[in-house]
Length: 196
Image (cartoon, rainbow, N blue to C red):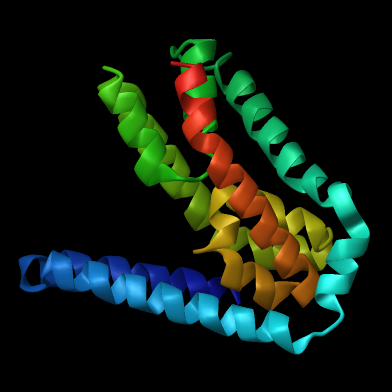
């Protein structure tokens, strides 16, 4: 499955390069939004068909928050380690890594704070996080465990990467991924400015 996703991504990049200005950006934005909504709708149907999912989630209680907490801690630890090898300060690396995959917001926040380089790095790092999620989730779900497959997506586990997580795990994990994504999305606008 990872190969199919990777080939699809490459075909999309190729189409963008070769079609270039022939494709209206506004139409592409609307089409992307509609396809994402359709994808989320289909994941929702899958979750709704499994009647036991929500009772299992309810039984988990506050333990369900351990996943987004772990993902946030892991992201920040990753940013701390990266600061040892690159010229960016620890604070800047923490701001970049606290984007949690939400590239459109984290890059803008850093750029608006007067750090265009940090904004660019944040944008690219978080785009790469999302792309690597599409490729890595099938492997992680199969060879490690379903719950670990939630982590790579970060904030995107509630939308763009939810389908790949759902497809490679089960409905219970998909709901947990959605909850994790929502929690991480809520903390990004708070965390990024803290480190600026």
